[in-house]
Image 1: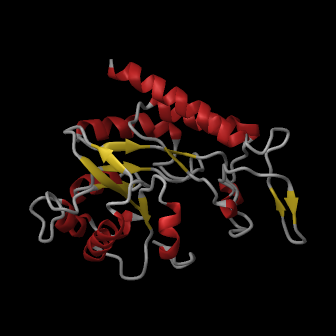
Image 2: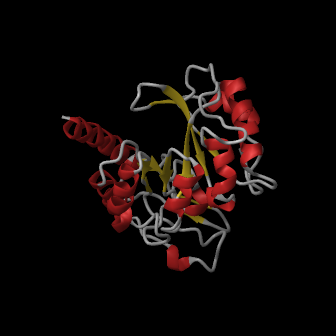
Amino acid sequence: ISDDNGEPAEDLVPAVLDAVAFHIQPYRGRNDQSVHDNIKYIIDRYGDHGAFYKFTTSTGKSLPMFYIYDSYLTPPESWSEFLTPTGSHSVRGSAYDSIFIALIVEERHKHDILAGGFDGMYTYFASNGFSFGSSHQNWKAIKAFCDGNNLLFIPSVGPGYIDTSIRPWNNHNTRNRVNGRYYETALQAALNARPEIVTITSFNEWHEGTQIEKAVPKKTVTRVYLDYQPHGPDHYLDLTRRWAEQFNREKEQWLM
């Protein structure tokens, strides 16, 4: 679902459904009721597709998963009408019940996320220190809060950050990739929190310098694109594979 800056993505959905969980961006008029309508539409249209991502809960249910970006823009009293069992238009127990993940930016958001009836929280931003949620040093404490309240904690890791081509004033949030070390530090911090899921920001968001997809050196008249030299074009995909394998190995240990 696109925000004001994005292209409408509806036509692309069948092509990218490989293992897809939807990230619901803010849009004009977004509220608990409109998101409920969005969820119904998405599940009705794509729910039977073999690649539609389903998460297996601790009770063994297999449910779709939705990430709600900038969820704090809607108050918890409104979200709870949709996401708690006693809400006026509750999704719980219906054919559209799902796992709903809210964005934690500030520390106080964790209480709002719990009150709103969400199933968990993610941190999204790739810039360590940019927000409370995206600061690696806070992940263990957020995880403890989530564990105590039966919520999923999903830390988001990124390979670096630079968005000065679109936000020239924001260079204080630039994070150097250090040839992959920044990414590995973030991944290690995520695994140290022992989460069930780790998300990556991002696969191909070039304008914020968080992409991990294959990249070769390229320049245009107005822009030099960052590349991964001295490493090869697959460097960040290789690191991702290696850490995903490590994550799976460690998870097996935690569960023993």
